[in-house]
Image (cartoon, rainbow, N blue to C red; front, top):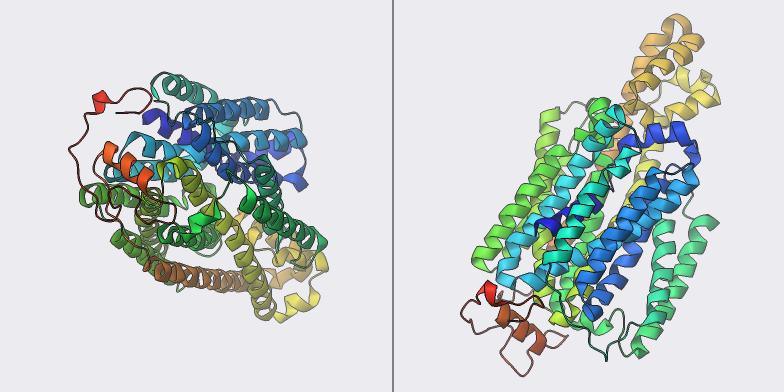
Length: 552
């Protein structure tokens, strides 16, 4: 468990550790225009491979793919560390992302191989907590390494930890399902699925930020994605071993969990992207402590995950935690939409903590409910689809929220700017004043005051500057709180959907869980054996009697 958590921790931390090192990386490698691609390439590769690798794990066993993922991730880390230009770094980050996708697709499914459903809660909670902890430590570790060593060590630090996880897992991780010679990966389905996912994620990551929604750079990838999705659907309906059996969605538990994960993922990612901008740009959190802005939410999420996992393991019930957690998250987002420029930092941190605790309670339960509702031979696929739904929902949600933010912010800045500044400021200065990121940089604000306003307005520069910055903060506060309100509406929708979640009692033994999930049909109805709704409890299996292949 420690080695599995370490592998997941490394791949999760790598999503955030690079951010604080990027200014140094750009200074050495140049390529400022390619800045966003360092993050986008990792996200695209990771998300695209998750459902495919999840299916491969079901067919050939998860151990080999988890170990392969760590190896690919370490190779990518070494290559990133020796990059000589931004193009190389972007390509090598994509390799890292492939490894991360292998790890994400298998980490939570391995829990299902090792423990029966009633025991999984505490371990899934630990895994989710470790994932959240990586989000906090990533920026802090990245900043410390960049300041005291070199930015290349942001990637090299993965090597000793990854090798340790690799060795331990190779020695002690039991093999999962043995390969069934009758099962073959649907290669046409895998290709069309990847071709549908990658351009869709790319288009939504560009939309409203780099390009307009109606631009060819957004419309063409979305059109191609839709075409590939149609081809994928036709291939899957005829495949003997489809990548995504659409009959899964006839299983009401799987369908509800996937829908809740998608919608709540959109709300969570949108909030986490814009919370730092609000806390720093509006509530005056120190820009030098940018890595700590999300700490209250993340620590609360870790606590919620741990508590929720323990409660599930002790009670065997997950619906009440799912509904309660999503409700708390909705309340937290709504309260954040009430913040203003006059709100205190402590108030903002309290609302963030409430949001994080609610998310921590709900996310592990959705994974458990999904795993408990499907045959064991589909465990990797369904678990990876849960991860995929969250990532995809987050990408689409951030794109939509970004458009809402931009439109509202432009209106607020235009109406709130002092008339003299609007009339006399040259276009370059006006363009700077329309970018809220300037509020996050103390040096940029000082240059704006001294060189921009001082040279243009003379004795009136300081009061005009203060009025302008105040109007920018008011406009930014209004725009971001609108985003929070929209995210709260999405979270409320996820609460409504979660009310339709059917609760199936979690099995208390490894043997019974294997027997019942294998006897259960895909649509959730009981097979010819014991009912999955009212299982017959068996005596616990001695863990020492389980051999390395996982069979009692």
